[in-house]
Amino acid sequence: MGSPPPRRPPGPAALPGPLSAGASLRQLLDSLNREQRRNQELLVSLAFGLRSFTNLNRFLELVPLVASRLVEAEGAVLVVLHPDGRLWRERLQASPGERCAELLRQLTALGDGQLPIQAGEEAVVALLDPLLQRLLGPAKVIATSVVVRSRQRGRLYVFSARRGFSWSEVHRRHLQLVADLTGVALENDQLQEDSRRHERLDRQLSIGAEIQAQLLPDHCPKIEGVDLAARCRPAFQVGGDYYDFIPTRPQAIGRRRERGRWALVMGDVMGKGVPAGLLMTLLRGMLRAEVLSGLPPDRILHDLNQLAQEDLAQSHRFVSLFYSDYDPRSRLLRYANAAHNPPLIWRNRLGQVERLDAPGLLIGLQSEAEYGCGQLALEPGDVLLYYTDGVTEAAGLGGDRFDEQRLLGLFKAACRSGLAAQAILDQLFARLDRFVGPDRQLEDDASMVVLKVREELMLPPLPPG
Image (tube, rainbow, N blue to C red; front, side, top):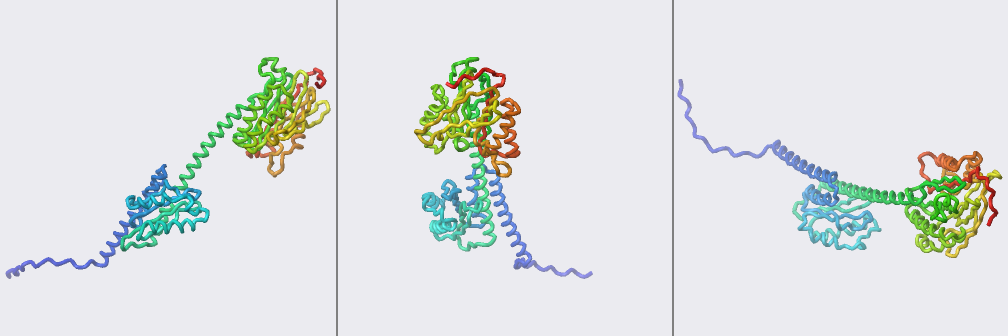
């Protein structure tokens, strides 16, 4: 066997050579993947804040921080505007806070008149961009707008004075994405505020409707020899229509109350909603006090007009009002009219419908207005219909109006059928609903009161006094 070859002493270790092209590419891809994962995590954190934060300011605090990290800038500034274009000082945000403290102070000091809101988005940008550039000194500044429903609601800036800072298309897209998420947050906050405001308004309207419902009679009183029915259908929760039955001797009870003189009133404040309802509430109190005076209808309207003059003048509204009083013992009806729709009366003996009217101006129109007074004796079977213009002005599906002639014809047919007061009222409202159309809201409040003299009452009427 031959001897083994002699061993050689180990030499120095070989130095690593340059990376291969494949290894370099893998390192570059790993670096890009890490950057991409970091950016995704930043955007995910912002999206999480958008759907999780109920406090807008907490979300806006994230915006400059995420924006600056996404584009590898030194910092960022978020300028937010109110929906009307004013600077929203409480929502100004910047990162880092120490460096931007003076910048935020100077932005907060901007007066509302310094931002050219009415001149449009370009004018606002033309003022803000140079101002931010001046406040940030030699740093490179990049900006994009925060837009909500095609309106500018702010401006997002990123800045960096670091050498080698570059601006890429990816950076532009990331910054715009942050600005868009900020716009969504501002819109969500506005929608929530609108919702809260509507809830508060709904509560106020509900309270107003409840109060108004309590002011309107919840049932018709018992008046000797007559049958009564009444209904008010407001166009909104609170309306300006008003009707009332007021005893002229409220201290009387039982049969004495039923046989006493009663005031029957129908009114309408020009307008709808809460203001009209409040004014009608005011007029109701004044009128009830006037009724106790025992004066005839024309004097009551005259005094009411003078009492309400100042309040109505300040509100720029007027009131139409038909006032009547009825004495069951004599069946005498006295009435005066402040430019309200004349009630219709079915004269049973004649088989025809007439209008009750008297001259007079709207309540609140002229301080020294005078009112005429009329009277007539009712007979068994006679029927009175008081109504507001919400009935005759109701629009049908074709755009035409219900009008007085249609109401007159339907009222005449119902009276000829010998229906009771409630049945007449129900039939008229049913025809009105059919005319307007199913599930359609009335444009104005609609009210009707029906008074029918019972036909079994055979006492002869007393001569007019």
